[in-house]
Figure 1 (tube, rainbow, N blue to C red):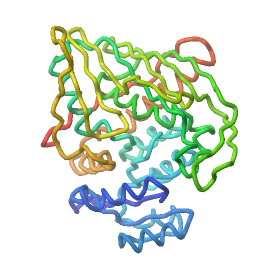
Figure 2 (cartoon, rainbow, N blue to C red; figure 1 turned 90 degrees about the vertical axis):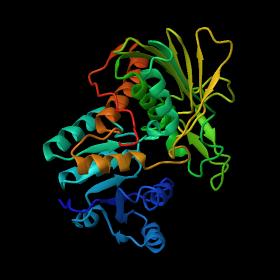
Figure 3 (spheres, helix red, strand yellow; figure 1 turned 60 degrees about the horizontal axis):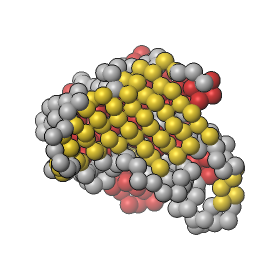
Figure 4 (cartoon, rainbow, N blue to C red; figure 1 turned 180 degrees about the vertical axis):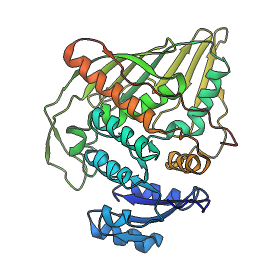
Length: 366
């Protein structure tokens, strides 16, 4: 594959809602690392619109896109149900892959993808990359510095009443491959693993509170959705470092004051930002303090910095290193999510089969 250019050529597959943010960021703030070469989508009108706005090449399908030798990485922004098939097709053609979350719907497919990528000598990366933002990186540095002592526990909570009130096409979020765990869980679990390392065992409980949902957002207001996944999940996660975390992922709760993410140590507590964002706020309260103290969050990765993970992958390709938002990390997170669901069904704890390296801290040089 080509490798002389400092920038890594990217081909985008799938031009839905999230593609606009990627295109904007990849062609501006991350343009030193990547060059968007081409794109494809099942909707030809979407391809035409991107070609007109960004001046990239448009292709009729994935095979045609993969025929361009200047494309080294496939950015997989398809529906989650297609993630595994698209990524495997790219790997089979010797391309690196960066996928939106989750890495795949099924854990077995994720394992197979990584096996094939290793055999092909290509890298796999996966969203979310919010943990690379300045907010969660500030939290990681505080933990590594021992500011709260040895981490012993954590809480993570994504609490809302679902997507039917705001998303233009919310039905998928209540079908196989979604629900609060596979849709939002990757942000919270990836943040936890980035802060405290891999998970060894999970336990879960779940329920489906509402059998149907009525869409109130446009343009589908009034349509009914049959709910086919659990919509309230509670989990307990045990980490290799000895941390025990509790998490709640729900589309069933109208309002809450639960924190998004907190880490508790032997010498204090850390309040982390929403893992679905890149910035702060970050606060710490050490053992002898009378109140929480705000921690300055500095850097350029605080607003919507989606694309950080792909830029990091591009640098790994050029340097021969490993990406932080790696396929191994995403596969580990996917297994944990499925493990919690499995535990809820069986009533037994689920022992993790996979592990992953704790992602390296982001520094000015990396």
